[in-house]
Length: 589
Image (cartoon, rainbow, N blue to C red; front, top):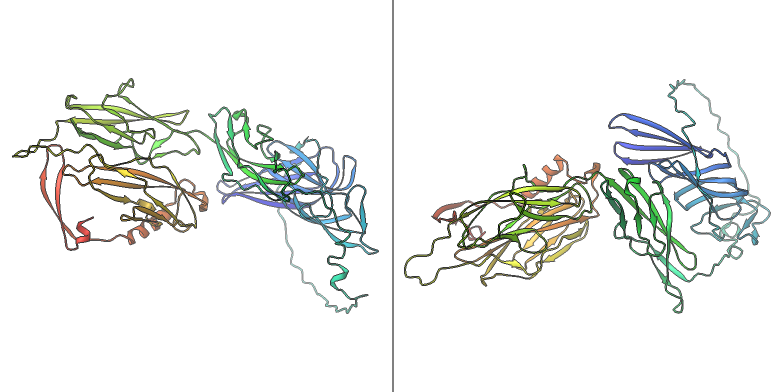
């Protein structure tokens, strides 16, 4: 009997074991103190004996077996027992082997098994003798002088829960035993030297298929895919597999893709040319995580695999970060003034969804003509009432749609009288067309755990050609982020010790040096790749981690003692302050 173990989470694990073609699974949820058992067996009871068991997930187990199946005797058979579909699939590897003992299984088609033999078959018609004594032999499809002889048999439906689990109380008795130590001196019939057992049969063990390619690679840029239950179909693209040509005249490698294993129902397909994953009917899958292994084969029949997870989620609506009650902060403005309203960061419990942000008036039909988005990213709203725009309150709705659910927020815009024109002998009033802006919109920045990354701000301009002061609000990213306001660049150095969540936002602030100064904030979103979160904190850090982070950020702050004096207050609700500090550096902040 062989067993294996799989941990789904810190509170959920699975123990699987087998007795021949009979498989048993026990799931333990320590958070709810629930334990469940299930069995799956081959009702035809083939003459197969287990040699090793591997838990690929909590529902898919690979068992290397030895014996006779479908008329093939003394063969190594890999059984894939799928507890989600209640199916068992047998795949034959290598050629006939001698009596096998224990195996180590590390994947769907990766194993090492110990045997002893006098004769080793290389193909159906060729073999070589290991001599007059039985030798220890390790069989493996990973490094072998045998032909792989990989053959998959038709999938079968297994019997479910034909065996029951019962709880028994075991009693123990202490017994004192006397152990006699016996020393025996043995002599070897001949000296044990390398030439008698190591690399002795290299010349005989020559199986050289006609290989045209080397260095097969299946590294993926994305290994985790997601869908929501509201989806109807879903398509996922994979990174093409690669290989190197051994000879210059060899044709370029072309991979043929197929499903090697999938622990869900037969609800998806893989394009043989591109490897693209297609789920035609999402409803055939349920909420949870599935494991998919895709195999690619070259023209010379070499293979390489890539593993993916496909996770189903219940769809929830997207929201604006840190906004309660679906009411955005009010925005006061004045006639003849153009200002931008920066929308908060969008958060969503679901993964890989595309959002559409739109605006409408309070009645949901249109919106004031002086309100519109500034660009196609729809991250900020430009409010520019004319001198003839009636003063008063205007309520608009800002809608976020994830393709299935719309979430609406109200935004009240208050239009007041225009700012007063400077009095005295000035012939011209000081104007400010608008705040500085980026020529190209900022894009989400991806950074890697353990790697230092720099990001230089893209080009920006001020419509009045004013000088621009650039500052950055680092927020909770301050622990691994530095901003150089002279070189206008960020330096990121995230590690698993200072990064506690997969998404961060820093804010870039532009302030023009104008008598009627204008400021604007631009969010820069960070995605942290390679983050290893403990206790499934994929969506939020626990309170203790946040406290540690806040303390680390607080330790980097500098305190200055300053005085503030109100110089004047304008009619458009702007207050001018004079800041006096002991240190010049502080007063210039």
